[in-house]
Length: 458
Image (cartoon, rainbow, N blue to C red; front, side, top):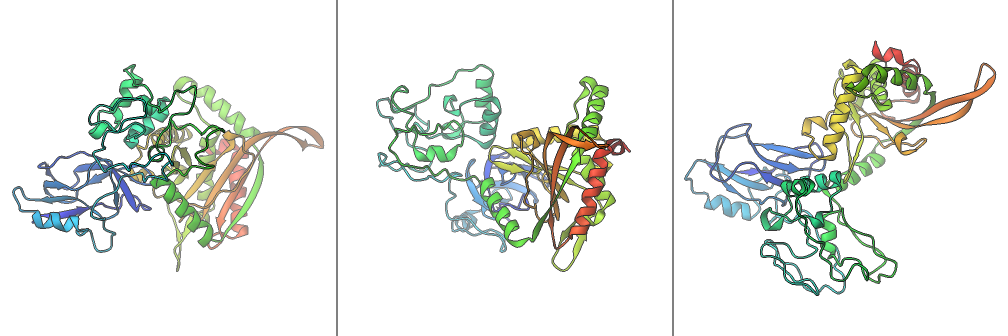
């Protein structure tokens, strides 16, 4: 019997997603576990695997559309079944699981337009985009978006950022002129580019892009010049990731009693240990201070397991395994890939895994299991010249460690003032789980490990 498939919850914090692409077409047979679509969530691009067997009779959502959690996206059943009633049900907003939100009759584009400039009076139609002439230029080719209407897939945007390519110079070959991955690759490989369309010459004014184009992509947008008179500010639509980050951090700050413990440690021993390791490795890879910090955090959690826990309301959950989350900054915000069983892994393995996860995080290629399940998190801003800072907890974890940079400073050693290297770390604790004395014990274990780094290899 035919049934409607709703958008599943692909990450713990997901409330909506952008359907990046379908990997199956209408009429294709599918079996449980088959990948049918790729969905951009608030964390990463996730695989949408079907749980039923049958034939994809109808795709209800187009690539690039934003869909609410549980909303109808496809109809699956037996070949030749009459699905007219289910199509009407889906259009009316039905078909989702009872506990999940349903979609409105028509899915909205991923980026919502912000306020239009005063000179723009013609509203843009729904897809497919209607060609519109730019002032002083001819009409664009049929099927291409209007000048300033920059349509690009999430993967194409990420790849353009990595390669330093201005998306306005890329000709889209996807549906409706949408820029897809192959278009960016073509330009990177030396393919032809298109000129940037502007309403006025560059030596007289900045390109006149509509506000909704700026909302759809956060790259290749230049700040207004001081002599512009279009207003004192610009509203840029937030991405799904940024909205979810704002929500979770607000909840964490409001609902969790957080306090901070700070220690300054001698980082010279770990710097020397790192140098010796990298000499041994040669061209086989490099170890960073952050890799050693992750290992020390994991071993400290093994020594003080009461901090490897979370608040569950009527119980404190103590985790038997140590999974360390590593905060990674990307274009849209922050993701936290997870090093699983970090206490049991060698330093070289941790270093290779961190590099791989960080690179794929920036390309939005991480999968659900790679960004969920951490029991403690590390956030390092030392490489940006930050001496010390405090981090907000990553629920449901009870602790997060903020790592500052290495500072050259005079210190007293054996009664003499000598040159020293110091690092300040700050532990944020959930006071419902970790009291001051317990947090101090954990920090002491962490400092002991870093100041005697050979113990990290034991």
